[in-house]
Image (cartoon, rainbow over all chains, first blue to last red; front, side):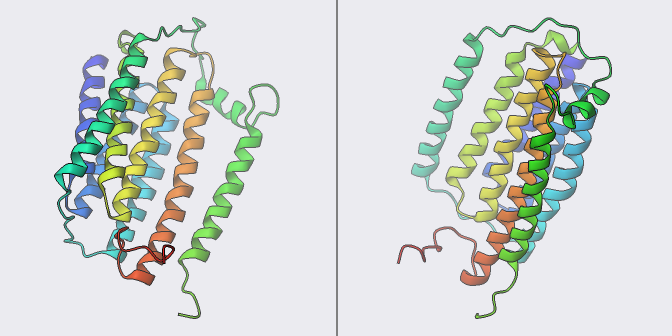
Length: 168
Length: 105
């Protein structure tokens, strides 16, 4: 049953990803991206990572998609259609990406992954919190604090860049 | 059972999504569409990290933590990118990257 759901969700993610890059109406492209992101959140839920799934839904589906749709509405006509990509360019890009995907898939399929074999964590959510704010071995409190500074800097930077300049 | 799926299927799903994002990045001319492709690329990496954590190191939480960091960085990137897009639109009245060549002249 879980196998069936995995392949079903994978198909949804791939179909909507492809639609995202070939769609020609900009608002529809944003909605296709929303479905691809929700598919990834479903994958997280399927693997029992509930916290990551919830964060994915909140930040991507709730935050970034709304931001993108607002920027679409601020910068372009809602009915804007992209001009058709020239055949030469799309073929060259597809060839490049296909080659890259083939090489990477070959590397994945020939590599021998060795599981650690240790028993899985009982209460992984609790362990996640301790590890995220832990200062000892395996603790991530320094990257956590650096991320908070990064978010603050991004917020200030976004406001400074997007506000109206005086001498225009 | 989920453990009956080989880990390579998760990784190949992530690879395909990554290269779909790269394709979009190469063929699009609109800045918002390029940003959308970047989001696809960033998200495909999260599948990788979660799969490694689930299948190879189920006794640790490092993969899950990196997913959270990745989402935070992606959010910061999207905010700054949209600010830049708005600024560019104000200056050129367009978000098409072919028109933006002021640094060149």
